Image (tube, rainbow, N blue to C red; front, top):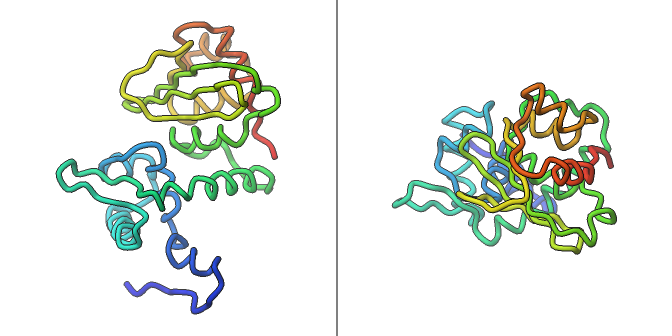
Length: 211
């Protein structure tokens, strides 16, 4: 399939020639916190076909945005690819202010983690030290606040956290952004909570799904 490229010297056009194809930035999103195998990437992108994902990964590898470890069978971001995090964050911020967002649609765990780095009340988070755990199936994340108000998420295999929230991506998004208290969500089996429930509630109260 022949790609359509922008024949311009504009830097925005140049960037779009690299990552502007449909699904490309979402593939980058899924790899932002950890390298993944092909099927794990597909799990975070339920609408993509195997053929399109293969094509996008090939394009991103060729562009130097993604690297493929043939021994592990995993794809990960290069330094150039990791440099797209501020782009994803800016798009989250812009998307939150633009009408038409439907949070009932599928949300991958990685997408939720990235959105939380943007939707946190930085002023309210400043001075707090928190280690928050999130588990979604086989994926686990540790999100840290170190006093400067900046949320730092990382994908982990094991963790020591003040509390752990468990659920799928959409239910965890309800816990983070919704109005219902965590105790009620836990009683309704929307999410599970391990550890300090009060600390977990104080943590999710730092987030608002708005611009």
